Amino acid sequence: MDADEQAILSYLEGYGDQWVNAKEICRRAGGKRRFSDDPAWARPVLVRMKELRLVEADMAGRYRIPPAHESEAPANPEAGEEAGEDISGEPDELD
Image (cartoon, rainbow, N blue to C red; front, side, top):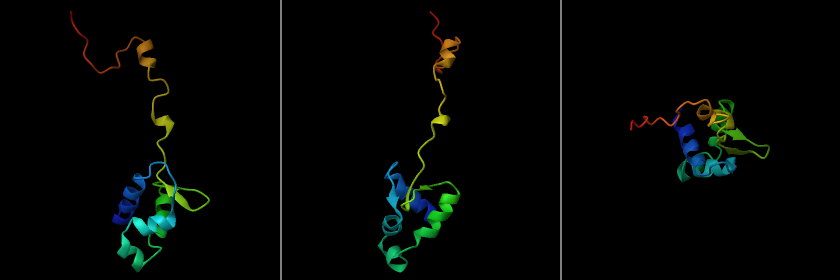
């Protein structure tokens, strides 16, 4: 990941799951000087990041970091307890 991608990701992390306009990303992620030198500097980077699925875009040209998927978490975190397994990670107490 190059410096431009890192700058954009760190900027978008501050917005959580909110959508941010591409022009706003160009203006704020790279600083004033970067924006004055090339007002659209982030657009090709955003397209590349979208292809790599680092960000997602909507039809209005806004971007955000994709939210965490539900499938990454176990479907039933208490399933191990029902089977009699200790899933707490703590050692059993010996009385």
